Image (cartoon, rainbow, N blue to C red):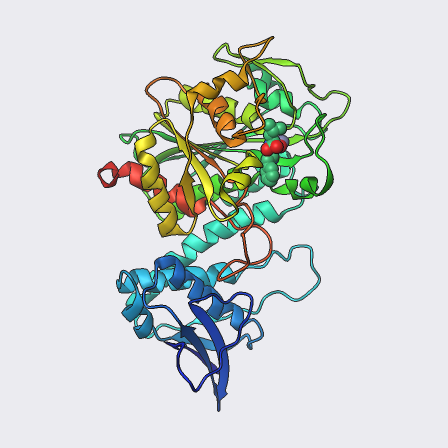
Length: 463
Ligand code: BES
Ligand code: ZN
Ligand code: ZN
């Protein structure tokens, strides 16, 4: 059987489109068999299509074929999409469509007996088009790596198995993997990581991924929160909040995915990724509210709340990035519940000590589908992080602006002259709705955004 994907005007009277949950305002689908052929009509109800719209069309097309026969060959017509594309560049249009296709062609089925998703292959008339398809596959694979990591339950993905998995993922690439653990964490002054991990029988790991393809380039550090389960610790989480917490390593997964994409796309970057991996539990050795932690820069932090553990381990990551000579640091974390209250579930918050760049990151988010919105870091709010016992408290005394005070806490660890960007993705680690190319489970948020952020730092004239 042959399958042909045919985009048409939604207003076409001959076809009644299906309102399926993956469909959107601008893209609907209908399958019509014609002899030996199956036509997938994609009804386009919008005059101008962004790249993300085109990715969604690819996603809807793939999902509509989940029952198609394995050996079917698929081809697609792109003329209507090209006509409607905001930027009608054939390579980008095909790549975006196929990125959506491969992202929808994902299922986390490691622990399911049910049959796996059917395999379908796209046929290309011209050899030159295959290259765009390949670029899309590389991008989607990196996002799907982050999804895989986030979807793993906490009993399967511990700091130890996570570190092993990363060794495996990067084995055949230019990325080197170093794991710091045990006494080395203490002797090398990773105070936050060591402290948070104390209450769990799972030992902490600090994974450092290095991709040094061009040592002449300024070193960029990506730091990702890797809490494989966040119970809150002694300030234990309650109710349904706790079930989500296997994905509290979403920041580190985004960084791992971005490193994979940088590696596989042969980007000439000088990037170091720092991934503190811990489990936040509360056994008899656990750290306690009111404990004081001394960091390598001499700063003493009072633990106001053991559930604000992400910032404690990221502080170590940020300090280590500077020790390794990074001049630009991007950290990404499922850091605060407040970011969802501020922005809803579509966009993550982006913060920086170089505020003027924030709109550029917002633009990169719009292009990649990893939406972010600029947030302030008001130094005045340091008032809320005052500590009686140490230099700073990890918990704000105000019930308002929790994402901003969390960012401000991190900023205390950034030295003068270092550019720092912080992404709070607590609200986007899952898709806000399962439309287009999104499927149940993790979204894979951050991979494409971090990749483009690194690329744009390599060519800063675009900012
Ligand atoms: N991992 C959570 C943040 C989170 C919340 C992620 C919801 C995903 C969904 C983080 O460690 C946390 O618990 N933050 C606290 C901070 C507070 C104790 C200052 C929060 O946001 O409530
Ligand atoms: Zn927490
Ligand atoms: Zn957390």
